[in-house]
Length: 512
Image (tube, rainbow, N blue to C red):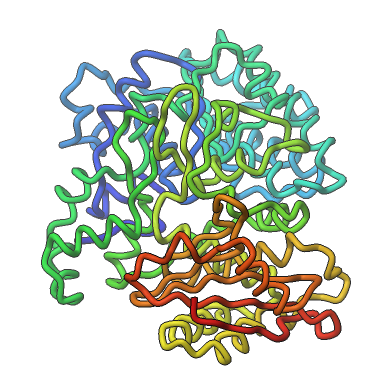
């Protein structure tokens, strides 16, 4: 079995006999029932391959589709001129870069079709190309745009953003005026930005991002996985010394869980699944190639409460287009693939991390970024923390935990309690143990409850007080009471921050 890891060209996959999961019935439904589409999906989710497939389809490369579902339909494989813009390959740091990219692509296609262009301005030159392609070929033009929003995402919170948005608006506004010359338009992206003409100007655009019928257009369903990866599943089960059923359960826990409509079937991230069978080991694959730096920066700047990311309920507005300068963190988390739909009870959606890979990778990245650690140290420290807490070695536990706080820059003041709370929460989540943060009781809220197989740790932190005060609060508010069912030993722990060292200081413990 040849896995097309990193290959985004449909013709190469088909000609070189790589594994291809047939989505062409859905593609046939698209091209035969509409004209202007937008699809939002996280990075590394198969958007570029979908665009490449549409390119081959409209170029009339019928032989590439032999044996696929669309070959059994009435599709005629007519040949159309296709203009493809791949913004993933465009380095846009200012408005002039965007204009130049459009000019370069326009000139390339003009040369390819031996067309002479006379207009200089980037957007009108593109319009001239479309009109002359139509006149020369006597066929309407197909426009495919991949990762339209990369130019914005690369420049969030940068001075150049307003001008970049302005030139993008002019470009997409011109596309709308070319309707009579266009056969089909397909646009992909990670996010949906309002007041960019993709959404504000194209009134006839169909948004597929939460479309029930096309929820599985990208991604791999459980049925597709089991039907197409038989050989790989058998090999990996033997290597992991697991039964087939146990292996499938583990794979699902690690990589499945994305849901793009509450009544649709969940899907795997294709990049993670292909990487698993290519390298034959469980690792965090998607996160290492799709980590949006802008999102981590935003978390630091806003000191967002990370506890809100788990089992969070929100209305449909989280999925709507918004301004890049005023986009909510939750909307970014949903659209970039860090949160997905887990349940829907009108009018609220329940959001959570899709799977273990995304959750663990995200919190590791937060811990590394917030603690200013070298890459890889976070995982090393958390492994030691798990061993110490399981053996009840609190001295070494807190000594190791203090390493996460040792490198925090001095200009982050100790009064910024949310910063430290976020780092605590990220680290404790990484432990892989049963953890609850800010647990509500009838008369208070516990900072942290950490459970191992035989022990429950009730932990209270004091940022501006002593560990004895923390312990007194545990007693006064009877935090341990709800856990006193006799099944596990209860350990009460009061912890203080030392103002001079700006790190964990003394702690006290008692048996509850």
